[in-house]
Image 1: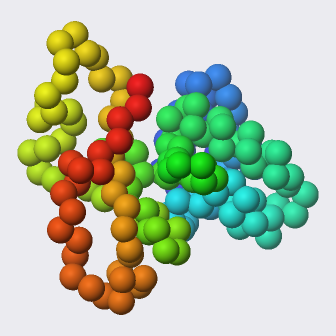
Image 2: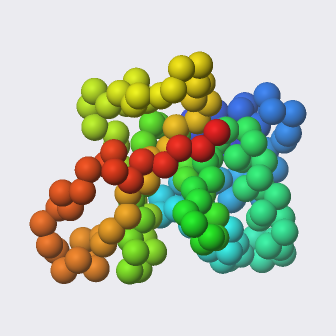
Length: 160
């Protein structure tokens, strides 16, 4: 399936390079992620897509999300044992998780601190993936309190 939108065409080409086709279901799931960039769970994506594709199943949504992730069009975002969320922002960034309402917000890395160069790693360690996570209260839950002074480095999480 080809859409006239340049971002949709690029996504279809990326899917194709991964050995898949951009089906109507995959396109709708991807579009749902792009329309509202709030890091939805698979169930939330399912509920958004269901209006446009009434016959779609939750299993199909999971399969679409898996393909989009495998092809590098979206990232999985996990925190503790909560449901996996999906993020279409492929630029280098981390996430802020609100401990009160569960909101997830993209956070840019501070200038000059991108990547892992500023960390003191043991010799011969090779970083294959770098993620950082901040936790606290979003503006709505904090009552508009001043920005958190907690250092991003205190909450950095690594996975390999």
